[in-house]
Amino acid sequence: MELSPTGRVVLGLLASGPKSGYDIKTIVDFSTRFFWAASYGQIYPELKRLAEVGLIESSGDDGGARRRTTYRITAAGDRALAEWLAAPDLTHELRDEGLLKLFFAGHLAPANALAILRAKRDEHERVAEQFRTEIEPFAASAERFGPLEVLRYGIAYNEFAARWCAEAIDRIENGNQHGAFAAQED
Amino acid sequence: MELSPTGRVVLGLLASGPKSGYDIKTIVDFSTRFFWAASYGQIYPELKRLAEVGLIESSGDDGGARRRTTYRITAAGDRALAEWLAAPDLTHELRDEGLLKLFFAGHLAPANALAILRAKRDEHERVAEQFRTEIEPFAASAERFGPLEVLRYGIAYNEFAARWCAEAIDRIENGNQHGAFAAQED
DNA sequence: TCGCGCATGTAACAGGTTACATGATTGG
DNA sequence: CCAATCATGTAACCTGTTACATGCGCGA
Image (cartoon, rainbow over the protein chains, first blue to last red):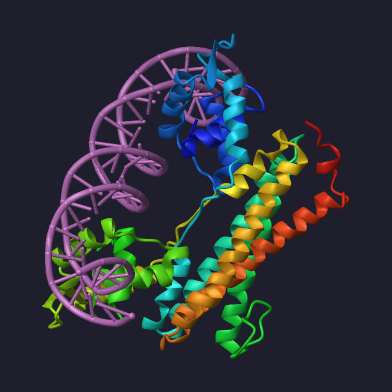
């Protein structure tokens, strides 16, 4: 049973307990968003599709005062999730406009290349900080292995990128070739 | 003049000399692919759109024996490129299936979490190696600032990710201090 | 009562991949 | 001559975002 990209987060999140589409969106925005985003426009239709093929089922109204449809994973859903988790395939796609601009920065004055690097550095620092203040509390409360490790990866990745930019800025400003990330030769 | 995502690479590449759609695809696959991909299905229509709005113009058949349409950037194209490069906005999107699987790995036995980490580590090592052997020669030949710096970022990023995975594997295998794994049962 | 957050949904649009179709040229 | 590579293009399909529409319930 092939899971669609959004189906993967949805099913994965439902594996740790019943949730509504709204819940899923909220959790995604506080956890997987940086490496696996999802919007309402994908989540709600996907919940219907997953229910149609029997990987999840709706609990109907969950009894609260507010209209609310919660879904829970089925045995078939558990199997599909395990199957996906066991599959060797790991897509990895990156769209990094800072790198693209840097790639073309030779067409600009050095000052502009510096501006690009500073903007990228600042952005990574901002996101690393956001991870620490907004997401860490959420991830730390997870009782299972996973969320906290991934959060730490998020912090480490953004710190790496920010540091790389800072060193590149330094190399340009001071003609320093010896950053920790500089390639071996040269 | 708002550039579409694919329009940005296309225009940027044409800024360093006339090229055909085929050339652009080849260059992208050897350089920007890892942080800014593009397919023929986007490149050829985009070349027509950019020509329509006057940012590039076709040189017609370039005289070679083979049928071939090369495009060159116009003055308006140069301005549009500079404008985009100067804009403060930097999109950054990541889709990393290894991280998503890791996020849900608490539902699996520890051995499966290890398998995911090993697969991600191996993949990053493979890509870092590919950068060194395939892309570095290309980037090193660039006479402008940009390609080589970005290539080095690619190597550093993949080395960072591979090292992070290796360390996570180590923590799991050696039962290091992390409570996350002590609590792991499932 | 008013505004915010909860809650669900959809339609229009944008962007992208894949597979396919077509044909020329070059090197072994 | 045959396979690989050069070279261009399109149609079908998939995935995703954005903007909008709707309405309830709760607290100040």
